[in-house]
Length: 350
Image 1: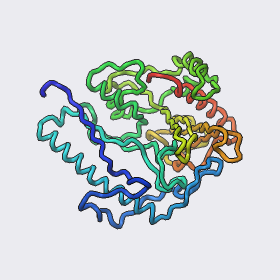
Image 2: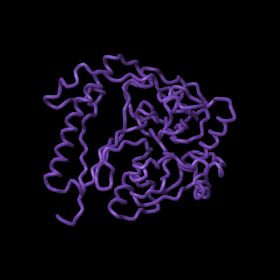
Image 3: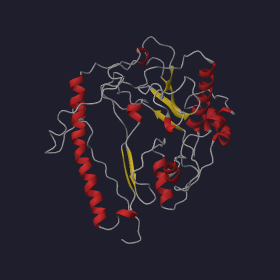
Image 4: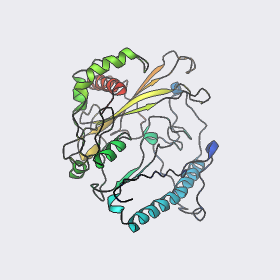
């Protein structure tokens, strides 16, 4: 009714695979689409993870992977058609220009990347990066940005756009459309703020004393943000947390849980980024992951904490673990990332 807000969530199964890893099923009439097209082959395709991770899978042939990829993009065509019908209906009702539309996915997926023929649970880019499209009042048309956002930012953004008040316990930050459009949205000194309080709190996710200790450090590391989605203030989203827990004992990778942080920074510990840097500037993005694996889950291994550090500006495929690089710059970077991950893993709020 006029004057009353409304909400619709559409969650089609496509382009998800069938059970037991069988290929996705295209809609009738879409079975032959994109014939002759092939899946892009990244440098990490069929490159197995180190044996210490104990996550090996049977190698996948290129034909197998490509057929699955074709099944997915063919089944995705029906989703495209559904979105088109929705937009046309909103337009016909005269409410399109007053409606916020968000298009995204819950996770990525492997098709042989890192030697994993399936799965979606890791902290690698193939799993955690998802498409994100948005249109609506105040959203600049035709804009593409490298701004690093997180799923927790979506409810914060919608609430801000609706004129609501953000709650202090909400982890998200409203997407700053005006700052993104003007090119002002980029990394700021959150990492520096954490480094000034860089005592690393040792402990697992169940360590309550660790949580209490990090709460006392949190204020110095927490940025001041705005609840105005159209504010021109430069926002803080240089760091996002990535977490995964595999608690189901029937699952083949049970116990291989991790916490990670993805940080974009002008601190170039390993030299200039090969891709030209993030945000069109002299920046790179790091991913720092700590895998916490219970004893006995790794055959013959007593060390149950595995750390990874990737420089995504030089190594988008995440093949070179920089954690053991022996240099003062690496030591300083790891010290800061340890502190940042400790704080962000236990904090609450933006």
